[in-house]
Image (cartoon, rainbow over all chains, first blue to last red; front, side, top):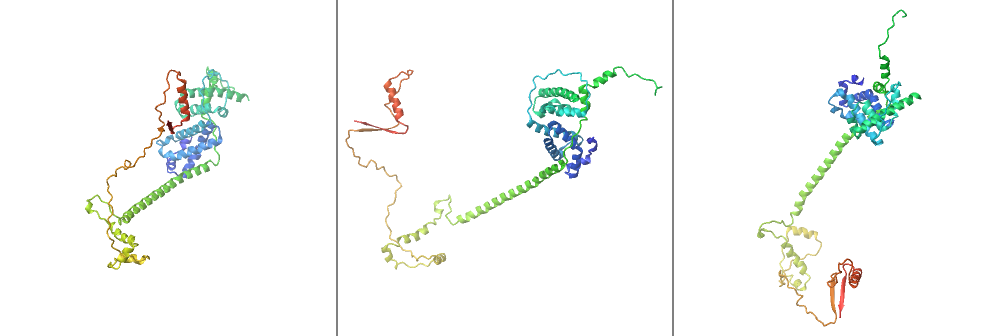
Length: 176
Length: 236
């Protein structure tokens, strides 16, 4: 949605450090950036810090952006990296040696986006971060593992663990 | 509506509905529509503060750099001026050169001529010959010095030449041999050893078996004698 509204003239103005254009870009993309940071960190204050750091970097580095059409994904990458930097200070990843792979294939329940969001936020920080990067933002395991400073296998095991937990949490939320 | 014919859905529709209830499928469809969260209302104000703070240091950095460069330049200029002044002050003194000895100027001899009469003015024999010395017209520079010098005027006096012993640069012979040595017969013999004990018996290295006397002596000597002590033995 934002991709269609952001035109090249606005990007040029932002590159020229025009404050009004910067505010316009901020208003158009702030929810996207803040939601990503908030889901990874699950903390409002830290997510606000990430939001500000992200926009400061965006406004400083936008002149180096070679493909203006990739502005949104570039901003998302900056926000994810900033959030992961903060998240890495809060927790440490553990190698999940024996994740129970017997995930129930038959999931007879219907849930909506709000319930899924609630379940995602209830995940442990490490598995939540991996789920957000891989399942939501679409990063491959290799890149997510590099961002988080973990091995690829750890990323995969954390994702499986997150999926299993999500199923149980959603069932619990539906029963409540 | 009642007259319209009824149509049955395709086979497997129920299975498709159940399959859509699969967790992964539901997730895929819902992850793109997750609810958005809005930041605080003052987020832009805080961001604007940060941006303005980040813009200011660029000016301050340049300003500080310019100030530092100007300080360095001023210091260099001061040092250069100071170094230019230094040779002028040193030019009054003798200039050392590596040329021939005959080319060297010896300006230090003139003050000696004036210094000698001052030292010898206290001798009574020279004071009597003061009247025979002709007066010399002072130089303009000396006149200026005389005006400022409140001390009494001293006229140069010629002194009789004295034969001073010229010091020889040859090395003086050692005079220790010429000193008379007093040799007295004593019954005592003094030996001074600086930590050296030539007569000390060495302990045997036969796995701890040694003469008990020797070992004891060694231990006692080690205990008694700290390093750097002088040990004097008197022998009758």
